[in-house]
Length: 313
Ligand code: MN
Image (cartoon, rainbow, N blue to C red; front, top):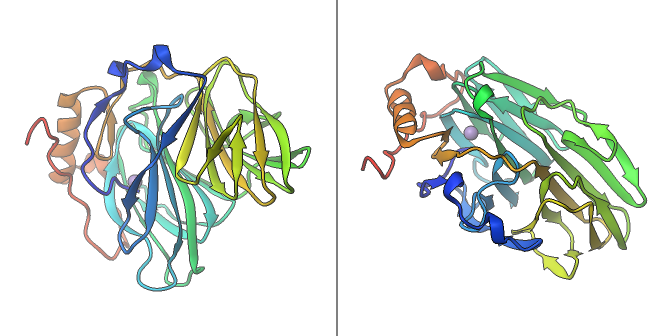
């Protein structure tokens, strides 16, 4: 996806709150709209929290009724310095990119696009589709040593799964619960979808070297006294080996985690970089049609132009 509006820039390295974080902290998502009434909760970045490990962006999209109208339509736009990570819960979406990839994604599948030095892509609802759309879309910042690697795309139709008591765990990035996902990652991180078969109270094991975020995809959950809605993200500081949850039958959670990133990231529009001059350069190159970002073919619509960053406006 693309940033739907012009967020303020932020500098993760200058965020002063890291030292005083309580062990559990609720992040309330800001409501966005992705056209035609499709509701999005943006959990990362937020004013309270910029990153969790290398996870630098998290949108909870829908559930939305896409039976009428055009559904999702995000025209060709660029990315740098990051990976886009899509986890489908319900519905379908068609991805096209400047590598020539044309890939439908369906529930239980991951699309992972590595922008590296530069890529462009589009995303759209197919004409033949399910009435409901529900997904999580995330970005992973690439570390300094990897942020100019060649662009790449991976589709993973099947992810490793296990059970832990009455919880169904699907590991979609990194390693957790004794499983390792096939998704290519470049820093220590994880993500998992957790489903509850019945009402239960239990503990979810965590990697104490990671900070984590827990988001409710559907159902109802209380985490150590904190009741979450589907537009909340619960932040868990490093040093925990688990968290106690009470969930209702049929609930699903998204758990993300990673080692604190430790690099100063500047993120603006669809670019991740390390400074204003670099981001300004990406904006200029994309808007001028620079071949760095390639060309998306087959999308019936216009490419998205980058607005000017606020430091240039
Ligand atoms: Mn995108």
